[in-house]
Each structure stands twice: as structure tokens, then as C-alpha cells.
Amino acid sequence: MNNQHFDNYFHNTLAQHETTVPADMWNKISEQKRKRRGFLFWLKILGNVGAVSLFIFALGYGWYVQPNNANNIAEKSKAIKNKLLADDKVGDNSTQNILLENNQLATNATKAIEPAIQLLATNTFKSNATKLKQPKAGLNAGFVIAKNSTLTVGITSVNDKKDSHTAIDSTYPFNNNTTYGKWVNIEQVNTKNKSGYNNLECILETFNSASSPIIECPSVLNRPKRQLNVEAWLSPDFALNATHTNSSNIAYMQKKDSAEKSSLSYSVGFRISKEIARNIFAKIGFQYTQVDKKFSYKLENERRTVQVITIRNIVRGPGDTLRISDTSLFTQIGYLEKNSINHYRTIDIPVLVSYNFQNNGWHFGATAGAIFNIHSWYKGETFDSAFNPINIGKESGFKNNIGIGFYGSFHIAKDIGNKVSLYAEPYGRYNLSSLTNNQSLYNEKYHIIGLQLGIKYKIY
Amino acid sequence: MALCERYAADKYEAEDMLQEGFIRIFSYLHQYKFEGSFEGWMRRVMVNCALKHLQKKKLQFIEITENTADTITTITAFAYEEMSADELMKLIHQLPPGYKAVFNLVVIEGYSHEEVAELLQIKASTSRSQLVKARKMLQYQIIEQQKIAV
Image (cartoon, rainbow over all chains, first blue to last red; front, side, top):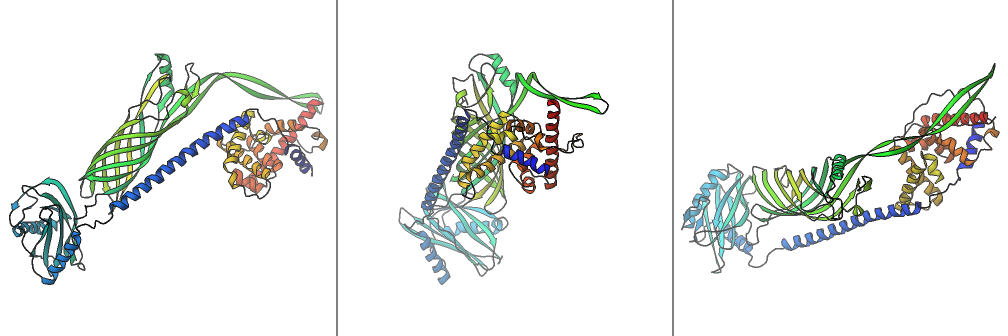
């Protein structure tokens, strides 16, 4: 009962108790709210930029994959194939030169194909892919038919100068009934053979399928699809600082250097990579980088008030002891060690070119390019000229955009599926501009070394 | 402000709590479902914010061995009924952080021990024992003050 009354008294007295709110409280709340709104504003801007980029990308992709209706060689190729299947005979021999991989020139198409087939028989079926080079004028198509233990190779070519096409094929005994080949890629090589025709490179890939005896070669009328990949990555980073003073104040720089220490930072981003030429990729993306630095300093002449309660027992007589509590306040003066982490954050667009080559599911390459900063912002502290801590930001001479940086890397990737591969990419980023403007006490640049660990998805 | 002061160690910490609390109120205003009073909703947000602030400081519920508990037998109502709100606030401030949080939540805000247990991620029995000890400590302080006054 006593306790209930005791609690009720506290509740009734304090539940609606009001105290004076500092006069500047509302300004502080407004300021903090404005800062948060700023962050959300940029988040929305970034979201919009991403959405527009995706829309443009989707639009471009749709345009790119539209079928080319003009001079539909695919249809011609199909007609020729049907004719060959129906008549079970060969077509006209072509008199065009055929350049094989070993640069052997032949004036007779059949002779030219013969070593090609031998090449397939001896090499292709032992490995997954064999390259076969064929010189053709601009538009070509071909197919491979395996039927009744016989391999038929058909190649059509259209000479755009003469506006005519020929079909050449050859039939060879084929001992392995369960192994068939298909053309999986025909792409134009930007070199010309001795006859002045562009070389075409075909990759014949073997596979096992007893139920698919006829494999149609894709037309090469439509431009061969260049690879398009999406990469997502995360990188632990380490920042290297380059700082020099604007005021010849050596003591200031010594104080600053002793207070700051680089710590582990990170970047995260995604990129779209498009093959623009054989083994060469253009990459563009979006990335966020956060560089962290420990900032430690001492605040001198710090005052702290300590409450000390002294309890004394005063014996006034037998059985009459009075207990007295004295409360005293002491002010202590000393120094306060403060440690904080400064964050330097950037959002950037990397524009890169990469050279890649692959071997048995492993990819190797090098990448270089530029990184364009969209926005930079900071959180943390630095010293003013009197060595007092101040917030880093626009007021202390920090820029909202650090401009362009150079990027260079090597990478190694391993396929883990038909379309997915994992990669590691040690990289370096060299920033050209300083974080601070000329009004600041010092100029500071940071450069980054890191290791991107990512996943690549092949869209096509 | 008084609500924050009851949970905070000092006035500056209370200001931080109040500031953060209002930012949260503005941020989550759309989540107010017009169920119950708006003041009550604001109060809950502010309390949550204060507790979060305290949890950042690693609020600990330590058992304090007291020689005060046994000495208190009864406290009469007139011992504290003349005390002002500011005096009660001072007494609450002298409580250890764990006692203070539980006493504020249960006695002033009216939360049940189960709700306190959920808010502070402690057991309901811990909340009960902390309240008992907080109450005894407050009563002891009141009695001691009276003795000095005598």
C-alpha cells in the first residue's frame, strides 16, 4: 500500500512535469532535419539517375536485338539446307578462296573444306572448341549437318559486290555417331586475306546429343552479338594520402599528420561491360567509395564536475546514532582524449576499357580508364589554425566534387556456370584533384589501392 | 524535455535525446495511425529514442549490494508529499542507470514489467527486482534527507 502511494506520488508529480527547453533547440532540430533531408534528396536523385540509365539501356538493348530484315540470309541459308536435305546432294563448288587457320590458301572450295573437316575430326572433338577461319565477303551463313554417321558442312556466301550467293558443302564420313557440332559463333575479323575478302572466324563447338542430328548454323547476316555483361563488386580498400600545407605552417601539418591514421575503407559498385571489339570491352557503371581515417586528439583544460557523497555516523548517545550524508561537488581539470573516424565518401561513374582473354574457363585481363566523381561529402573532424577541432565540410574548405581520377587494374575470373563467373581485380585509383580548395589550410588528395571481388553475369 | 531529463545523465544528454526524438517523430510521422492520442505516440517515440540512446552507452543492470535496503522498514507519506518535482527529479538522477530506466518506465510512464522487459531486452523478473531496489533507494535517500533536516 505504501509503495503504491509512493509510486503514485512520483507518477502524478512527474508525468506531466515540464522543464525549460533551451532557446536554440528548435534551430538545432531544424538544422539536423535539413541535413537528413539533403541526404534523402541525393538518394532520390541517384535513384532517378539509375532509373533513367536503366530505361536508356533497355531501349538500346531492344533496338540492338531487333532482327535485321534486310537481305535475310538466314532464310536463304535455311532454304539451301532444306534443299540439301531433300536432294541429298551437294551444291555448286565455290571458286572463292578459303583461308584456313594455318593460312593455307586453296582455290578449290572442296579442297579447302577437306582440311577443315580433318581439322574438326582431329581437333575439334578432342577439345570443346576449335577455331576455323573462312574468308567471305560481308554476308555469310553456314550450317553443319550430321546425319547417318556423315558430317555435312555447308557454307553459303554472298558476295555483296556481285549480289550473288553460292553454296558449298562437302560430305565426310563421321565415325562418332553421338557427337555433333554446331556453329556457335561467327564473327568478322577485321583483317583481309590476300583476295581482299574479310576473314570470318567461326568457332565450332562440339556437344553430345544423339537426339539432335541436325544442327543449324546461325546466320551471320545479323551482326554477331557482342558480349554484354553485368558486374557487381565489393572491395576492401586502403587509402594513401598526399597532403601539403597551403600556409607553410609546418607545426600544423605535423599536428594533423600525428592525429590522423588511415584505416580500412571500402568501395562497392556495379558495371555494365560491352564487348566493342574482339576481346575488348567498354565498361561503365556506378560506385560508392568510403575512405575512413582515424582522428585522435586531446582536448586540454577539460572540466568535469564530480559529485561526492560522504556518509558519517554521529553517535549522540547509547542507541542514538545519527547518519548524515554530505553532498559536495568538485571540479576536476584535465585533458580529454577523443577518437573519431572521419569518413570521406564519394559517388562516381567509372568509364573503363578492358582487354580480356580466356583459357579453359579462366579469364585474364587488364582494365584502365577514368573515374568521374558525381558528388563527395564528408563527416568527421580536422583542426583549425588554432588546433581546435572543427567539422570537415564545405565550411572548412572541402569540395563537393573531386573531379577525375585514373583507374588501372588486372583481373582474373573463373566461370562457375554458363553465364556466371567470379572475379578478383586488384586495382589502383589515382585522383587528380585535391579534396580541399585553395582557401583551406592544406591540400589533401587520397589515392586508393584495393581488391575488387565481384560476380559477373553474362546477359548474352 | 522533462521526459528526456529523467533518462539522461545530464542536461546536455537530455538535449541530444530530445533533438534525436523530434527528428524521429518527423521521420516516422506517416506511421502514426490515428489510434490513441498523438501526444501518447510522441511520448512513446521519445521514450524509445531515450532508451536507444542509453543502450548506445551500454546500459547495464547491475545488482548493487546495499546496506540501505535492510534499514528501511516503512516510509510515511508525509516524508515525501511536500517534495517538489525538481527535488524528485534530483533523487531519480542519483539512481544508477538501470534502476533509473526501470523506475521511469514502470512508475512514471506506466509500462508493465513485461513491456519493460521487451524494451530493455531483460527478463521481467529483473525489471521487478530493479524496481524494488530503485524504490528502496529512493526511500532511503528521502529518509536520510529528512534526518539531516532534523
